[in-house]
Image (cartoon, rainbow, N blue to C red; front, top):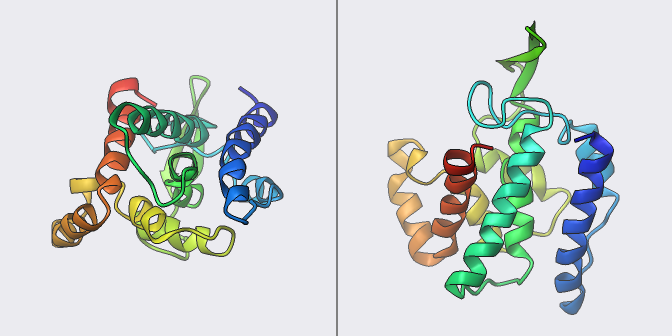
Length: 188
């Protein structure tokens, strides 16, 4: 899939979200695709050596998480503070990865990645929330779902915060589930 095809899919997904947001008097700025392109969102891998470790893998993984979260929402009858949250969270939960990897080289026609040791922000979920803050008006539930989407894969010292987040915002658990389905079952 090309960058242009990925951008078009993102705009289609965001249009679904925008309809929900418009009902509440808020509209997404579709120029955010320019920002996402400028930070490498459409070309970044989802991981260095695991799921989606190819150019564009981050987008492909994010799209799968959004789709999984929408399906879980429908099947489980979940309610959200904002109806479009499953799409927004799924598509942007790993935005931090646009800054996490650099191309190390190519071997047998496959791009090899290394960790970027020169990033400004540390972390994963918290880094994604910070990066999104200047471009999206997240609800607290959306911020918590993105912040804790790694579930028990967060540092052990953070487990009590994760448990509290799940207690206060049960969709945190479903976000983690969607992420695991995408990465571990589907393999993206």
